[in-house]
Length: 257
Image (cartoon, rainbow, N blue to C red):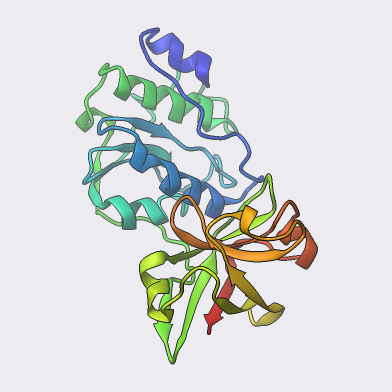
């Protein structure tokens, strides 16, 4: 894919966000885009290919956000969070007659190379304009259902979109502002329940800390991560493996005092 992009223009600056999305995990691709895109300047072109439906009738699109970022991807749920976070300015369907790598028409299983990297590079290098990507589509994307953070009846319910996989920390989507409904401060004990669909997988009481060094090694803690979202960890351990807690749209968490 990088070779295809460089074949369009050697002046392009190409960066890797990640190559570690689990196979077929569209939800995690959506989350990683929403986690990182905000730090890049307007005009940046993102190519995201988590495409288990490659070669089928799903739409191949470029989404322009209200913040001025471009996302080149299959419209299969990957844009769920970006559309919410940055807003939709306009969406265009990639014209694969005009915007496809030459002599690739017989290839049906690598659109990342033949369509998305090629189109993204042409757009980023200004070889084509956004309007030349293809025809305009309604400002709607395929969305993945997930648990949004809500406060009701003295508890906060949220989702577990992703793990900090290197350390096994469990990241939720409960932001600090929502958590303020529980009037939490460092040192407080938080009651935590975790569910996979309706099955309760974990229940415990965790101390809220600013940083891991405030707890003994091996101690379970809760904290606000670098995105200021409520998270769970074992100091120098692995919360996910210890309690068999994982991530995705079917996982949810309930917090109370």
